[in-house]
Length: 87
Image 1 (cartoon, rainbow, N blue to C red):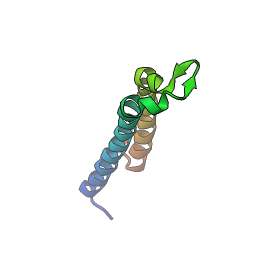
Image 2: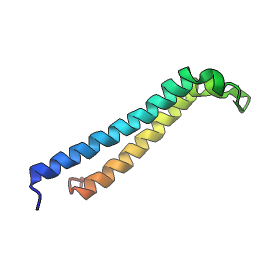
Image 3: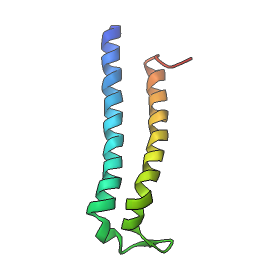
Image 4: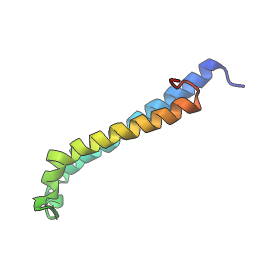
C-alpha cells in the first residue's frame, strides 16, 4: 500500500500535468490561432467575421472560460480519486 507521501506526489504530478495540458490548449488557441495562423484562418468567415480575427478578439477568451470549467471538473475528479476532496 502506497504511503501518504507517495499518494500526494502522484496527486500533484497529475495536477501539474492537467494544468500544463490546459495551458497548452490555451496557448495554441490564443497565440497559435490568434496570431501565427490568423492569416490562413481569415479565409474562413463565421457570422461575417474573419476566423483569425475572431480567435484573436474573442476565441481565446471563450476558450479560457471553458478551460476553467474543464479544470474544475478534472480537479474535482482528481480530488475524489485521491480522497482530498472538500466534503
